[in-house]
Image (cartoon, rainbow, N blue to C red; front, side, top):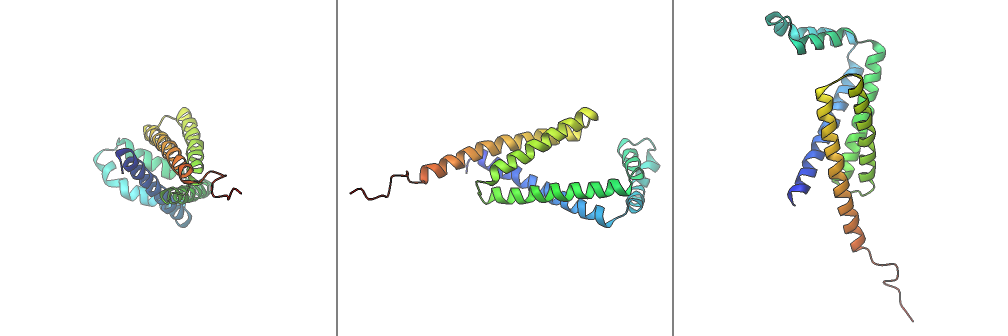
Length: 167
């Protein structure tokens, strides 16, 4: 296994773990009410805000949690569950060398890259930019790997006339 293959597998596994975290987050959003999320965030940030009332991250977390509604939580849960499930299933299929899964993974990531770019244009987010760059890298690696696997499969398949008896 060369360095590019190893990098592809590692980034794919990271994307699969990201999908698992999204599934967990989606399940938590289904099980935990917005009020409970708000209470948990306040509890987790109270020490930091006591030390530094202007803490950027803690204040943003508290503001985000206090603005959660039931409909936003449901939307978030559905988004995370669907996105996470599709991601995990496609990553597993690609890791099992299912050729059909490569184009689906590429298409899925390209669609979400487009959505992420839109979100960045609406509201700047360094984390989202980094995620988008990572997703672009995975798309690039997946295209390379797909071409290699498809070429390898075609090289192994017999030509249509091979194997026929010529009389």
